[in-house]
Length: 277
Image 1 (cartoon, rainbow, N blue to C red):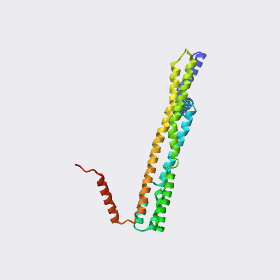
Image 2 (image 1 turned 135 degrees about the vertical axis):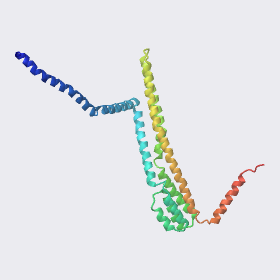
Image 3 (image 1 turned 180 degrees about the vertical axis):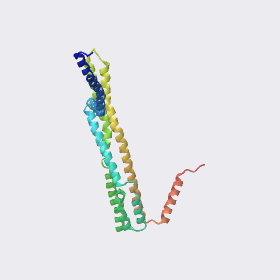
Image 4 (image 1 turned 90 degrees about the vertical axis):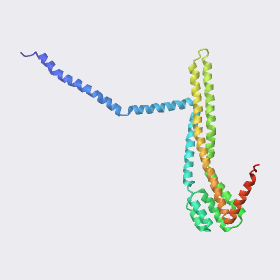
């Protein structure tokens, strides 16, 4: 028995429709996978971070912007000083010690040649001291000139420290100023609210005001730590320069004179100790 024509048409179309629907269903996960692989969630998170940062800057006002600029300046100065100290080679003193050994052995030319190969500020001071000491016996004038050169070297090593001192001092004050201004704005908004006072308005104004104080401390604390570290390096350099200068000017002392001076120092120290009953 043959089927009617409309049933034949329906049976012919139905398999194609099922294939099309299956293809559409199978293509859906492919589209989802391509969206995940495109990295859109990561970009969205980065945009959210940037938006939060910009909102914090807008909340803190110009004080936050000034503190951000000061933090960038402080970091740049600190990195510059670290590079300068590395270029000076403050921790590399082998050639300075070797030059002093040559000087004690009356090998002035070898000592000066050794000092010329290093960029350590101690070497620059020793060069002047050895040159003048080998050409003149007027120790007073030589010491004056050596002290002048030593002060110049220390001033170069201490350069830009004033910038860090200013930033470390002003950062908390600027943060406090921003807090005071924020509190004024918060209480003004509270006053304008009248009888319909909303505690959330006051609390929101307070945390926005305290944001600048936190930012000021965040800038000041690392700056103070970095400045103290740099000052310690300069202080060690000063002590090393004084020690090297003393060795140059006392090189003519004989071993007997040195031992005699040590004995005199021991006697004077023993006299300072009170006798036990």
